[in-house]
Length: 239
Image (cartoon, one colour):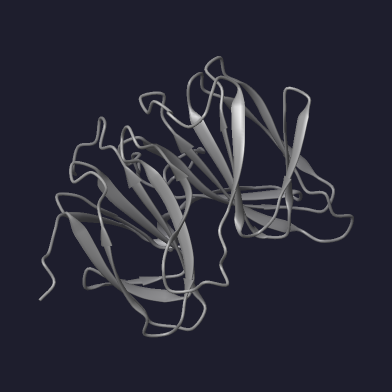
C-alpha cells in the first residue's frame, strides 16, 4: 500500500505563458506577468521553465548572484554562452552554471531552420554548491539508452539536492529513496504519463511531495520521460 504524503499538484494548463514570434515560455512557477494565481517556488527550486526558441534566435538571462541554473535540451541542441565561454549541449545532456557574482547567460538556437525546446531550471542562492567552483560550469550526460532508472545530471552531496532524468518503458515501476529525508521531491513529466504516489500525471504536469523518505511511480505509456528533482525546502510553506 502506498503511503500518502503531503503534496501539491502543478497542472500543465495552469502554467503561466509568455510568447512572441521567436520565443515561447511556459513557467511552472510564476516567472512572468500572468493572470494565473501566484504559484510560489518549491523550496530552493525557484524556476522550472519549458521554453521553445525559433531558429537562429537567442534569449538572455540575468543571473541572481550565487544561484545555480541548468539548461536541459529536450529537442535539438542549445548553445549556452557566459563570460566569452560558449558551450553546446544536446538532448541527454545538461549544462549547469554557478556564478557568485551574477552576470548574463545567453541561450541560442544554433540551427538555421529548426526550433529547439529546452528546460530552464534555477535554484536559489541558499543552495551551496560543493561541485561547482566560482564562475564554473559542468556538462553532465545521461545515457538515456539505459532505461527505467534515473540518471543524475547534477548532485550536491552537502544538501542532497539532485536533478535526475530517465526514459521509461510502459508499466515500468520504480521506487526512489530520498538522499535527505528533510528535502522535498519535485517530479515533472516531460513526455507521456505516470502514476506517482497514486496520483495521475500527464505531459508537463508537476508534483511536489514532502515529508516522505521514498516515492513510488509507474510509467503508464511507452517512452515516458520524467525529470525528478530533490530540493531543500528552504522557505517553503505548504498552502
